Each structure stands twice: as structure tokens, then as C-alpha cells.
Image (cartoon, rainbow, N blue to C red):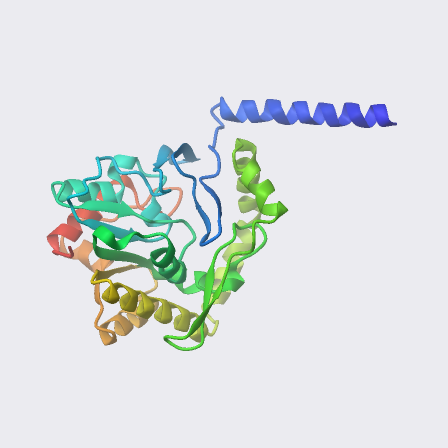
Amino acid sequence: MIKKSFMFLSASLVAIIFFELFLRFSPFSYGVSPVEYDSDIGMWHKRNFSSKTVRKCYDTTYYFDNRGLVKNSYKYQKDKKDIVLLGDSYTEAIMVKNQNIIHNSLEREYDGKYNFLNYGLSGTASVQHLVMLQKKVKFDNVKEVIQLLNMDGNIYEVDPKTFDSTTRPKVFLDFRDMQSYRVIPPKPLDIKEKIRDFLGNFELYIYLRKILYFVKDDEVERVADNKKEENLSKNWLQVKGAVSNIKKLLKERGVEYKVIVYGRDLKLKKTLTDFLTNQKIDFYDLDSLSDKYSLPLKSFSCDRHWSDEAHRNIAKLIIKENII
């Protein structure tokens, strides 16, 4: 019995190794996980790291620098001011060729006048952005922070209930009012997360996650329709509280703060822009700017993320509107 068990385990291990090698050196390669555990945010980009992301409509190599930021395609200049970009997977844009991602496109549009630093991280919302500013951003050389808010996702992703056991840990905030809140830290680096970090170095992990996402797609579609009927008052308190505290934090540091709003739900955008107007925070509606300057924001055909052309056009919109 022991011999048979040993043979079975050995055969299974060999099969897994060969399957991993097959995935890594075949047309079916998906790359490996771009993130690892982080005690402040819950997850953060792997440092000095490169891999690929693959779907039906793109096969792109992405790069992160020694701080875990989406890599610059130019050399950082200490004598130039920094512009910090905050956002989710649309800003992170690992599916876009590095030289075309918004921060690198902006550096070209502004003829190298500033250093543009991309703090975009998939799955994050305004509450995580506040913690990023507190824990990750070095303000010594920062002139301005531009936050790109996708309200279609942001309004839900501020809620800890969106977290489930299949996703990486995230920090959340619980606002009792606009200024008072408690931090809900990411869960500790337990054995489960250590195993997940280890498995995240293998293509098999991404392959299994893609299968899981495929299985969950139908459930996500069913839940999406129900969300429209939910009471979002607590969610809005988290969004508004986070934005208000970002404004306060940056004002204390003498840093300018601008918000670029986008998303398909016009009601959500209107609620946010009314709040930003009341708070005297400069904001811009990305879709309106796209129409104003006839610069389209096309998405990849297999998902809704902005294409390479869209990223270049957003940089053009920013300079045309004198946002910086």
C-alpha cells in the first residue's frame, strides 16, 4: 500500500512538472501571477519582475520596477517633478505594450518635463488608493496626484463584502463619517497566502485561476443585475470618505489633486462629480473629453480594458485640457 501511494504521488508530481513545462513553453502560456502578498495593501506587484498576460485579443509582456510600479520606458530624472497616477487595472494596463501605457505616453506628450509614476493596481478602489498614498508614495518630489476612478467598479470594490477566498487579500477602510474611519488590515501572511505566493510563480496557478473565473462568469453576470437594486449609501460613504481624506492628505503635503472620472453608469458618475464639485476638487469626465476632442477610447475586443490607442489618446486629452 505504501509503495503504491509513493508511486502515485511520484507520478502526480512528474505529471505536474511536465504540465508546467508544457504551459511555459507552448502557445498556451499565460504567464505567472503579477502580485505577491503585501502587509500594507494586501497584494502588490512583484518587484523587478516581468511576465506576460494572454487573452484572445492580446499577448503582452509587462514589466515592474524595483518599487513594484509599472515600469517607466524612460530614465527617471531626480531634477524633475513627479506626477503620481492612481487607478485600477485600466491604469495598471498590463495588457498594453509598456511604451503605450498612460504614464509613458504622458512622458512623451510632455516632452520629458515630468516623471510620471504609475501606481495602478488591479482590483483597487479609492479606499486602497488612500492607503497607497499613506504607505507607498514618497512625496519628496511629487507635484501632483491624478486619480482615475472607474465608478462602475469603484462603488462596489470599496466594500469588504466583495472579497472572497479566491481573491488576494486587500486592505479596506470602514468610514463612520466623512473623516472618522478604522482600517481593516489585510489578513496576515498565513500558510495559505505563503502557498499562494509560491504557486503564483508557476503558470499552472494562472491556468487554474482562469478556469475558476470561467466557472464564475455566469454567477457574476447574475449578481451584476441585482447590484443595481442595492442600497449603496454605505458604499458612497466609503468612496466620499476616501476621496475627502486623499484631498486632506495631499493638501497637507502641498500636492495638487485631480480626479479623472469614467465609467458607463451615468448616475454613478453624476453622484461622484456632484460630490467633487461640493468639495472643490478639480475633476474631468474622461468620456466627455473624448467626445470634445474626437479622440476615441477603444477597448480590447475580448475585455473592456483600454487599448494601446486609448492610452495614447488619454495622454493627449490630458495635455489638451491642461490637466497638469
